Amino acid sequence: MTPDSNEPQHGVPFGEAVRVWWRIALLSFGGPAGQIAVMHRILVEEKRWIGEERFLHALNFCMLLPGPEAQQLAIYVGWLLHKTKGGLVAGTLFVLPGLVSIMALSWLYVLWGNVGPVAALFFGLKAAVLAIVFQAVARIGSRALGNWARLAVAAAAFAAIFLFEIPFPLIVLAAGLFGYFAGRAGWAAFGGGGGHPASAGAPLSDADSALGEAVPPHARPNRRWALRIAVAFLLLWLGPVALLVAALGPNSVYSDIGIFFSQMAVVTFGGAYAVLAYVAQAAVETYGWLRPTEMLDGLGLAETTPGPLIMVTQFVGFLGAYRDPGGMAPLLAGTLGGLLTTWVTFTPCFLWIFLGGPFVERLRSNRPLAAALSAITAAVVGVILNLAVWFALHYLFGEVRERDLGPLSLEVPVAATIDPAALLLSAAALVAMFRFRVGVLPVLGACALAGVVLRSGFGV
Image 1 (cartoon, rainbow, N blue to C red):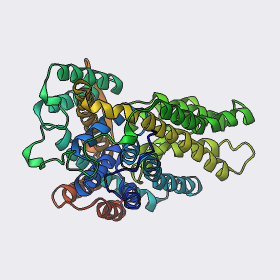
Image 2: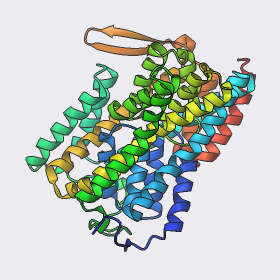
Image 3: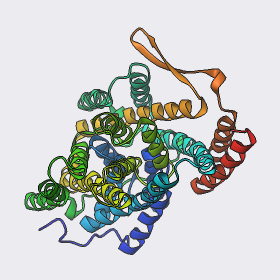
Image 4: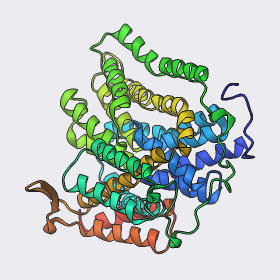
């Protein structure tokens, strides 16, 4: 028996699943926190295709992998529902809107630069993104931090990264070890899916979901299938890189892009923001593909378009090849560089899920390991909260200074540099989403329009 030998028995039509994955892809704004929240709302709460505990288990696993955890979560759920073709469709559609958006914006960026009205538009969109991220932290936290022990882990993770600048991998390791030994000791606080507060509503149990709680036949470990998947995706991933190096030599910009972003796909643990820190340093300082301010511009584009936040890497690859076209038309060179970057960044994600998913499904019955993954998710909530606070500081204030207080390192905003327009727009977006439960797209549209009006009104 191979993992694809039996038809799924859950009753979710493949065509309906494709439409839902398109919907998720088009609504996936706000970075990984917002994207995971969108998937949770649609897959667990609305469609009831996958249970709360299984969703969190899948999320815990994806948090441990290098690369974009939100896209990997989409691949994982798509694979559970409809085998390999489901994972391929879910993962590809999740990336496609961002690929098209960032490519179009990259062309506009190099052709027209920073035009006033466009900058004002993005200024407004950032306020909406800020509200989306905070709402995502609240939604995920309400599900994953349902007892004091998980809250304590999240708070400790927030303090570790915000005050002490402890690297994310160390935070993940510490949380995982803590959860593992807590699980071995029989501590129920880190049991799968437990501890949700009554105000959050009763979570959907795995047994009541369309997928059920049993392991589907195609999700059971099969060594021959694992070998076939590994060989196929290694060739798809690294084959084009090897051909480019052989054809163009190791010093070509395309060889550099292929090799560097392939390395990134393996070593960048800790989610999108950990990836961006690594890419920014190498792209600016090592390769000189772009300037620091341009890296920030790329991040702004990625924050305000659907799809994975690390789609900003496509912008980096685009500029790198655009500025070193090697006799090719610059726009064509940049387009090829951006597409190459996206290919070697996201193709490995399918490999990690298809190869590791069957073994991770077995871990759902291993209490110590499941507890370790639950503790890691709690820690990641604290880290995402840190990112939301960091984004708010740098959006609302024109100047933020870093102060060293012994072992502590604290970013403190300069009060005199607060941006009244940003403060007003952010407050309105937060009230709209938290108080009146306005949807993501209406808030994005309203904030974009208001950004233009406010920027003009304040004479900025």
